Image (cartoon, helix red, strand yellow):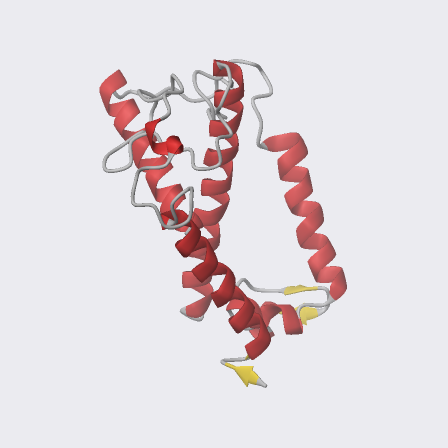
Length: 188
């Protein structure tokens, strides 16, 4: 059975996973106690980092930063920023294709105009087209989207010395916080 061109099974599974994540986010550590879990009380040394904002502050429900040094935290922050950027691009891509905008041409012999928006695209996208997408993503991941010159000023800085910000340090910090929060929202 299909709902808006998507298998109902996919919709049900995606909804169940989303709901279980939502419930887990508010579950207590000992199943029913109304006390704060030890993750909320734990001090990790990263409470003043960019992204530790009200109302949650520094939130590490899986304790991945327990015992972590600054280098490990920066690695995790880089991954968070990268995933946020991908999610923001995916949201924009979905909005654009849902509005009916398509690239000219084709992929794997199928015209872009014949590929629907959203998850329904996987039903029309040929295997060769999907492979081309994965190759393009792999190319970007391995060769382009990295600090190739070792001049990054912060995690996620991929300018490689090519661009300079004319903003003050306070404005740069604000813009970085906005990007981080927008990426978090897009991932939701």
